[in-house]
Structures are given as C-alpha cells and as structure tokens.
Length: 611
Image 1 (spheres, rainbow, N blue to C red):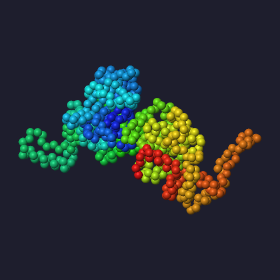
Image 2: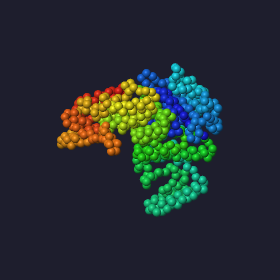
Image 3: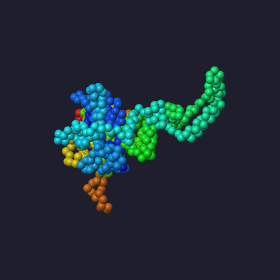
C-alpha cells in the first residue's frame, strides 16, 4: 500500500486567489500562459520543499484586494498499489505520520490534512512560514453562507517535513551541461557520492598510473616537460616521488571532477538544448531511482513528489510523446505543467487539469470521467485528444460543421479583431458533420473552456444538436435560449448563407481567382444539364417491384440558375473556396456576414479583446 496527495488548495499566492486542484498519480497541468500552472508548483514547493524564496510579490494582489497570508492545504490519503483509495494507512505510514496527524471522515476513511501558512512577521520584518495539522477538511464550495476553507481556524501547529516524502522540482531552464558544473544539481549530488571499495580503488588507481605512464612516454612533449620539471629537485629538498605528469586524474576521488558525458560521439556541450534538457530530466529520474532503491534496501518508506515544468522545452514532437511515458514511470507522484499538445494527448483524460482565468480568478477544470460512458471516453480520446490536442490550451473554442467555416472564420476573426486567432487564443474546429459536436463540447465543458457552436440550419442538424445538448445537460434544450449556439437562418448551410446574404459578387471574385482566364463561365456551361444525382419517384418497377429512380439534372439558366451553379461549385470545391471567398469579402470593404459578427460580438463579451 502507498499514499497519494489527493487534493491541494492554495489561497493568496501570486495569481492564485483561491483554487483547489485534485491530483492523480500523474497529473498534467494545461492552460494558457500566465494561467497559474507554475505558481501552483511553487506553492507545493513552499509546503513540502524549500520556502526560502518568499517575497512581497508572492502575495496575491488585485485591484480591490491584497492577501495578507498565503495558505496551502494538502490532503494525503491511503491508496492500494493500483492507486485506488482505501480506508486506512499502512501501519508504517501511520507510525510516520503519528496519531495526532491522522483524521477519519464520516465514511470511516483516514486522511492527513496539512496546512502551511506564510505571513509577515511584523517584528522581524520577514516572512514566517508555519505548519499546522488541521482538525477537519471542509468542503471547497461555499454552501449556505459557510466560511470558505481558508477562513477555517488553523489546527495544531506542528512541522510536517518528512524525509520519506521528498520534494523534487525541475524548472524549464534545465541543462545537463550546467548540471555537471553545479555540485547541488541532481547530477552533481550523484557524482559527488560515487564510492568504491578499497580493493576497487587500488585496482583503478593502478590502471590510471599505467595509463598516465603510457600517455607520457608516448608523447615527446609530455616527456620533455616531465624531464625538465625534474630539475626542481636540484634546488629543493623533496622527499616525495617528485614530478608526475598525469593527463588523467591520479586519484579516484578526483574522477567526478572531470566527468564528461558524450552522446553520439560528441560531448554534450556540442548538442542542442533539446538533448541537453532531456538528459538533465533523465538524470533526475536516475537520482530518484537510486533514492528509491536505497530506501527499499533499507526497508524505509519512500514517496517522492516530483514537479516538472515544461518538460517539452526544445524537444521534437516525437520526443515529447516519448517523454511523457518516461516521466510517468518515475517513483512517487508526478505533476507536469506543459504547453505541449503531445504530452497532454499522451496522458489519460482523468489526469488532465486545465488552468484558466474567469475574470482575474484562476480556476481548475477537470474531466470527470465517472460521468461518461466508455464509448464517450473513447470518442473524446480518439476524435478530440489525439487529433486536436491544442484544444487543452484554448481560451475559447468555436465548433463548426464544415470545412468552409473552419477555414473562413479564423480569417474573418483576424479582420474583425485585427489580431490572428492564435494571438487571441481562439480555436476554430471543423467537426466534420453535425453528429460530431458532442465529444468536443464535453471536453470544453469539463475543462471550463468557453465554447460556441456555429451551425448550419438544416432540420436534421438542429435536431442532432438538441439531442446532444439534452444528453449533456440532462434537460430539454431550447436553442433560442442558448447564447453560445448560433444557427444560420432559413435552413441555410454556410455556402448558401453567403449567397443569400449579398455576397454573390465576392463569390464570383473568388472563383475568378480559382478559375482564371474566364474559365468560370466555361465550368458552369460544362456542368449545366448534367446529373446532380438520383431521386426516388412514386413509380415501382413491375418486373422487380423496386422503386424507380430518375436523374436530377442541373439547370443553370437564368439568375437563379446562375446562383445554383455558384452554390454547387462552392460545395464541390470547399478546400480552395473558403480562404478565397473570405479574402474577397474582406477586400470588398463590405460588412462581415451578420451571423459572423454576432458570433464575434459574443466572443468579445467573454475575452474582452483589445484592438
């Protein structure tokens, strides 16, 4: 049996005003820059590691409030070897924690509630860190006017630093070349603790002596230097062995000072930062594995907490995918903050925590897989995570049905907001059919990422959206009341909408670029009168008793026929058409399509985008 830090709460630290984060054996923190991921890791460092870096800037400040305290609560629970919560701690852990730290909830489950408080010592004008054992673990949400968790009175003041629960932190600036030079790095600590038996020392130093002797005798330069320096004995009284030229360290104790690491026949100094960063992280894994092995051999408890910031730094996508598995296999509990869709996609859905801002308040989104069926989990994993891992880092997601919208809306957004969708943090996602909205909506809702559906107006599409939202919210849905659902009028799809709302000229301009030298007219003429498909008639074949079908012929005559021709071309050539017609509309100086403007206005109400 083992333990797990089940929940961490942080109040008043940097950008974290009040947040609770449930943790897994391996937890992956996602979200935009400045969303609080690094601050959360640093808060854990205060509680379980080194808290000497506290400064006035570490206290939460907003326009209306300044925190006078930093409070970090940690809840530790017992788990079995599969990571599932059990009722009681293993006896060895009970002895380590002590009876005064153990609490039992109303369900009979044991846990350890720990609190760290940082406040200004007005007498010494320094920041004092105090630790407490809480008497209870209150609900996070405020119910019926009850006090928030951070206002609950501190428990008994008592230190809870445990050597058996060491804290390891690796930031994004790691470099194995620097690690080799610094004695207190994880690599430096391992190198400084290299030990050999007396017998091995004798054998190694004899081999070094022979190697040095061979090196000197094989070099005229080194031999000449040695011979010349021996003249020192003529002027000085020296009872030792005199001059020795040693190209290689003479004593085993000096070997670690000259250790170098080579990869692919080159010293690490000549490799890029990707290899050096990855190597540095792997030395942490080596350090912890040695720690774990030593604890096992000495029958001691060992449960490290490992926090790693941006492990993907400088790495190729394929290396990022491999890296997640290497981190997950480290002993203990791991928390990874990342901006990599590849690392996020490598994690299990239940391991993802999305940090996002609601106004100025940082919150944590979580995918509660207990609410989903196995098929829904499979769909989210296959259709969303593996294909669109970047959605974990979105400020807002716009879901649309077709390829034209997916290409056009980002370009319209850039024209409207005067910034690219990437700058704004909006992801426009074509879901390839109305039946595919639900997995994306489930992910966005679980992670508290604002989302919109920009949908075609056909009846089957609307019915499917209603059904999906009913499944999501467990109630009947009136789409007119849903502010984040925008449906094109009159049953139009996006191509039809553009034609009917006054952008026919721009559609022609777009096609004139796609069909240069007047080929647009030729293309329409070539298609006119051809079969558009077959449709069932009311007639039945007397011989085979099957429904008789007839060809539906294209009729492109007259103004309406010309409009139909444009529509058919638009739907047949979605890939090149989307960007072309969008550019034509923007260059025309006309207002953007009304439904598009409505979408952007609603987005701006949420993101408050400054032009």
